[in-house]
Length: 489
Image (cartoon, rainbow, N blue to C red):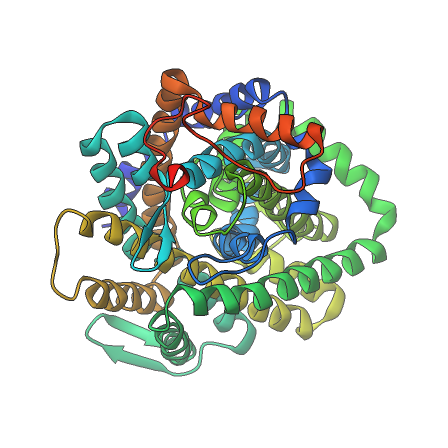
């Protein structure tokens, strides 16, 4: 099974996808005149400018839901894997993909808003909706919807829950071993799995509003606590910071693991972490109640900064500044060994050991708690994304108890991921991310060359902003944007 998953993941993540992610971000940065820099102040202003309604959530809630998807295992275990397989230089390429990916996030999230619908009293939207309406290719939209349901309900949840299980085991010990029909399981992981799926069930059976209300409290609190903890570690080792920065920059271009490994792992884990271009962000963006589609596009661009430039950087600096890492490229000799050779790279171990070296046993426990909240809120976001794509398919075909089936499938995947091996879980997750990224990036590029709706929306918003309007409006027909039925009404 491991060999099959690794082979499929390798095919999907051929270098062409890595350079497609970087190239698309650069292309949209140029087309938007680097909106991620020019409109940074406006992004922060817009965070708190919209209110929740009966049909939609506020901009801040939409940011929290999308951040709950972006800020997860990738920020703790994913950064460790990027360093472990690609060397310290991989961190630089994570920064690059975040900076360029912010423009991609603007484009895809604005499209999500432009082509959203009202379904059963709430806003729905995402790549399946804008691929059908902007491209006019329903078959392509269906492929994306089905692929996304499989990825977010079955493949990606295993990565998040697996990291929770591994972190709990490292922090609290393995406990006794239990024989089950799926193999021998450590008691700590089994108890963790039961707790996670129980809490998950309570929340996802409560609907999107409950998901939004949970994430808007948990995500900002844990992200802030995590960054503060990282700043303490960095502050205690501040004299080493210039040398660490120099190592990241020099290794990015003449890296110990080879340029291809640094770029490849930096981009792969960068996309996994911030999800720009993957097509997950537009689902939460479409659910927001805003006056103009470009507003939520800008808010979602800001979420990429929060995810990678703040949280991922915090993890990277903690690991590198304490020397709590090995570099062991796949199929090559270990190039750097600061930890025991058996230390699992595809896990939160580097991060936990980095904090432990400064704060003792509390460090491992803190990372386990942080990872639980980060990964758990990501599972909530995954459910919402899967539910949205089921709703898209339900417009054409009604399947009895489809949402109930979806919920139990997700819960089963989470339980399985919590108790199984990390390498298999990450391989399945890479397949899910890669398939979604391929389909979504191809889709938004085709839509750009067909009609440029996201660019037209940005220009319209900037003109109204320059004119000093107090109430923004959006008229798609005036801008030559077709099939934006919600905004026409």
